[in-house]
Image 1 (cartoon, rainbow, N blue to C red):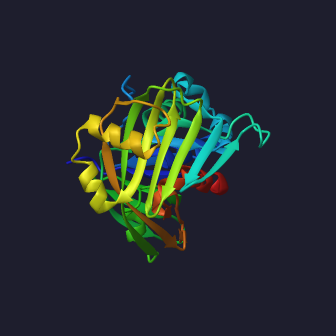
Image 2 (cartoon, rainbow, N blue to C red):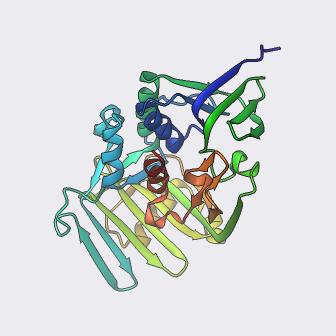
Image 3 (cartoon, rainbow, N blue to C red):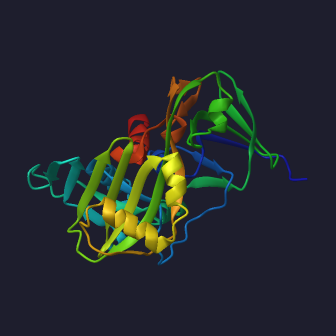
Length: 313
C-alpha cells in the first residue's frame, strides 16, 4: 500500500487539458504553490502527422500565452495566421479582413498537440507538483481548506480548487452546482485535407439550415474541416471512404479550394451546449468546459476557457 502523504498548496487544479495547464502556469508565475492532478498520463509528445484537433485562438489569447512565456515554446512553423474570414449563407457572402479591421491578423490556427507540448514544457520549468494517472475519490471542504482524496491514498489540501476536468466534471458533481444542458441533435465531423488551390490564410464557413461547414487554414496548402450536420446525416457521411468524403466536402464548399486529399483520420463528436450555474462554490471555481460549453461554429470554446483563467488570476 502506498504511504499516506499530505500535500498542501495554494491552488489545486483538477484536469491537465489546455485550460488546466494554463492555469497552473499562470498561478505558478504569480508565486503560488500549485498542484496539478489528472487521471491521464502526461501527453506532451508531438508528431509530424497533422493533429485532427485544432483551435482558432484570438489575438488576446495569443498575447496572454506570450505573457506567460508559453508562446515562445510553440512550434511556429505549424501555426497559421488567419488574415480574413469568408462567410456564405445561401447567396449572401460576407468578407472580414484583418486589413479592414486594422489588425495584423484576426487570429491563428494551432494544433492541440503543439499547444499542449508548449504548456507542458513551461510546467516542467516551473515549481508545479504534478500528479497523474490517479482518480479523485472524495472532496472535503472546510473554512480553512478544500481537501481532495486520491485513489493512490494521497490527500491534497488547498485554499482554492479549480475544476478544469471537462464537461463531465467530477469536481462539479461533488458540489450543489446545477447544469443547463441543450442537445443540438448534431454531430461535428473533423478531418484535415491538402488543397489543390492556396487558401491564402482565409477561414471559410458555409451556413445552411441546421448545418455549418468550416475550412480553416493550416500551414502550407492544408485545411482543417469542421462540418456540423444532423446526427443522421453525419452517420451517413462517416460511412464514406476518405476520398468520397473529400469529394462531398469539395462539392459543399463550392469547389473553392479545388481537389481535396485526406491527410488525417476522420473524427466525430456530438454537439451540445451546457452552462453551470453558478461557476463558483466554496473554495471551488469551475473553468473551461466544466463551466461552459458552446457550439463550435464560433471557434471560441477554448478562448473562453483561457479567459476564465485570465479573470481568476
